Amino acid sequence: MFNFYTRDIGIDLGTANTLIYAKEEGIILDEPSVIAVDVYTDKVLATGQRAKEMGGRTPERIRVVRPLQEGVISDFMMTQTMLREYVQRIIPRKRLFTQLRAVVGIPSGVTEVEKRAVEEVIRQMGAREVYTIVEPMAAAIGAGLDIDEARGCMVVDIGGGTLDIAILSLGDIVSSNSIRSGGDKMDEAIAAFIRKKYNLLIGIALAEKLKIGVGYAYPVPGEARDKTMTAKGRDVITGLPSSIEVQSADIITALEDSVRIIVDGIKRTLEQSPPEIASDIADSGLVLVGGGALLRGLDVLLERETGLKVLVAGNAMTAVAEGTGKSLMNIARLRYHAQTSRKY
Image 1 (cartoon, rainbow, N blue to C red):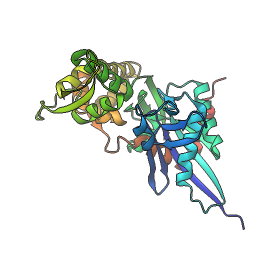
Image 2: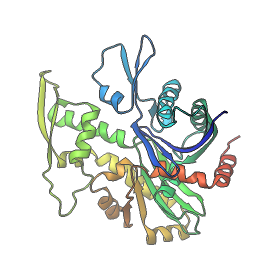
Image 3: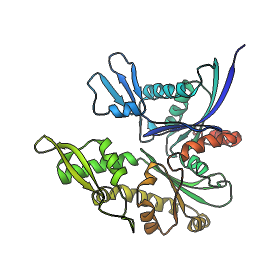
Image 4: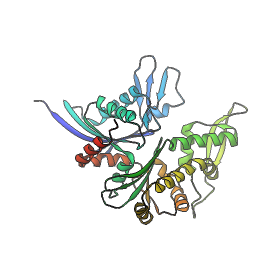
């Protein structure tokens, strides 16, 4: 007898990480959105964390690819191959036939072409039904906000490639802004600052470690401000390996422009909302999700700049993925949004 098996999954197809959520199981896959291939044979050598660790250390025959840039697919074939590898990990081998129903999160500012590309790559990996949901809405669902009430709530999703800001009410988006800036731009800013101040050339991977290790958006009252971390790289002047001690103050300075983009985006989104909704937000505040939400002092800075109460979601890293999976509980809403979002 044929063994038919249906599985509902939610996918956060992020620039930096891909997460897959399964009903009643939670997050079943969390891997970097990276794939390594042999350029001569097109053989996949590694995906996820193993591929990420190869970055900057490979010979010419090996290409390490991040197939998503700024929240959208930049390399269709590599994205398809990477996703197929991930899906094979989560589908039991003993199943002869598996039917997938998937919801995938997309930035709120994507074009219809970019949206169709995402849908197509999910279908190509064998999904029977594919729905898309904008990431701020998925994040709000995943963070446990009641978006169906006639009351405004605000979500700021700081991902690797995009910054998504949205105000939601009655199950839909009232106003939103999607900016092609996120954690990746922060890492680039740190690397550029270290090169300018210390004449030291470092990789993006190390810049990310500095951000996580000693990074602050704003000095947090009561916390030590003299945290340091060793950065090793190549001296721009001598061309020789060198190392320096990077302080938290350096990261604060390096991220000034990136943080300003977040503040301006929040203010612009609030300006676009009706007065009644703005009043709701003044009472309830806003919720931060995404990897960038974990930057120390960011919530303190945003409270200082906007006057709003700012809460970092307890599941900030996984909120979008959890929201995509939980949204499958309301297929009617997904189908409604799929129809109303079509642009002819």
